[in-house]
Image: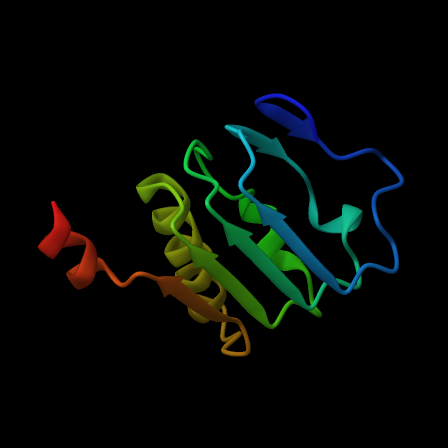
Length: 109
C-alpha cells in the first residue's frame, strides 16, 4: 500500500490469517470481508491518518482479534463500532484491544 488510499483487489488475500499494518499513511481503506475470508488477527499500529476500519471486516467469520495501537481516534471508534455490531448479532468471539486505553490518552492531552 503506497499513498493514502488502499482498495483491496477482487481476489483479495484468500489464505491470510494474520495482517499487520504498521506506520502507514493510509487514510482510506476500502475492503470487504470476502477479500480476507481466512483472517483471524488484524493489527493496526501507528496508522494515525486512518479514517475508519472497513465495517464489513467484522463479518469475517474467522476474525477473532482486532488490535490497534497508537491509531487515530476515528480508527479506534470504528473498531469499537464493529465489535458492538457483532455483539448485537450475538457474535461474542471478536475481541478488540486498543492501546493506549482512552483514559491514558486523556492524561497526555
